[in-house]
Amino acid sequence: MEATDEQKHLSGHRLRAVEKLTINHLPDEVLLETFDFYRQGIDSESYDHQWRRENVWFNLAHVCRKWRAVIFTSASRLDLGITVGPDEPRHIKTILSGPWPIFIYFKFVVRQPTRSALWRMRAALKHHDRVREINFRGGWAHFDKFFKETNRTFPVLESLVLGFENGFIPKLPDIFLGGPDLLNLHLRRLQLEHVFLANISGFLLTATALTDLSLQIDTAFSPPPKTSLLVCLQCMRLLRRLDLHTAYKFLEFPLQPSTPEDIVPLSKLTCFRYVGNIVYLDILAAGLSAPSLQDVDFDFPVEPPIVHLPRFINEIEEHYHAIHVTFRGWGFHLSLQSRSEYINHCKPHFKLGSVPTHRSRPPDSILGISSALSTRLTAVEELRVTFDEADANVWEDFIPWRRFLQQFSSVKALRTEGANNFYIARTLLQDHEEPGCDLAFLPALEEIELGKNSMSTPESQRGLELAAFEPFVSVRQQAGRPVKVFFGA
Image (cartoon, rainbow, N blue to C red):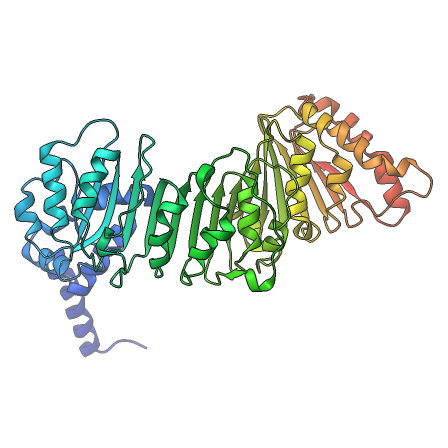
């Protein structure tokens, strides 16, 4: 239908209006969306440095009055604030007189704090009703002065990072942040580095609103987690992320049975990362339940037996489709992938890693970790084994591959990369050489994809590698369970 003259006139009028619409005439809500889009586009690893410490938003605020008005009336959404450090910002008195939240970042490693830096710290902490974040690292002399300035309430403090350097591990003062009751404490994120649990447990018991907790614990003089850390965690019902670091050194906490009454449910916990001693983690897992976990990353030297971790892992509601075992040097990692991660080639969110110690042999290490995942391993449909910067021949001498592979009763696809394919073929054929072959070994297997092997075999010799699998393929074919063997792209 042809447009009328009136419709053409209206259309032309709208077009001319759009042509005249410059950035100076954009509505406030459009400008705000643009500013927020720019802010969220900053890489997460450099966000604090660029947006906060470098005060990038100052550049936007200095363009014109209109932009400044939009930014200042949306301070919360745009995460505006003043970052105060040992040497920044300039004109601190004028800047601190404004209404914006204050972020405090001080790091002293070796050098003594200057009078100027201490003055800046005191000046910022005096505005305790506006301090939203504190990130403070240093030794005894630095914290002695810091604690003297933080003996009052901080009602809007959301994030606290304390790093105790040079072997200095203090007990948090009873009056820290206006304690000991801390009724006005609304912390959401807490990170404490190089601490004894006994020195911070009282403070942790009051941090009931935490959503993110990161602790670097010295376990040498700390009580078992069941009698210390778990008591604190049971008060943190909103916790979503837990990061724990302990020493790798051997611990001799007694293993105790747990009952359902002892278990602390953390129903909102979705991320749990741990680096350190397996004994500490195993005892902690004995008293924890976190069925909503989606992001798991554990790294520890295995010292069997692992008693409680299997129950903790089995209670996770996420279902996993594939597993990737990577050998790197003398260490290895197991990664579980959900079906969506597998299909979309996403980075796995369930990872367990280990390095054998003088107290454990490689076979004990890999079988120990796989035993902690035994229920999960029986359900995965794809197994990928990769030797990355590792000598496959050395690992083949150490790992009981038959026992390891027997755990994967539902695997349909086995994929290798960097392995000795001749050794894999011999492993698969072992039981089939006996009368009445054992078809219970990898019963669901449908295909084997071979990658480049550790011997760097020329492409002309791939036929020899495929031929090594023919006896296994023939036996499976006769039993009505055909298996396809091929080289990947």
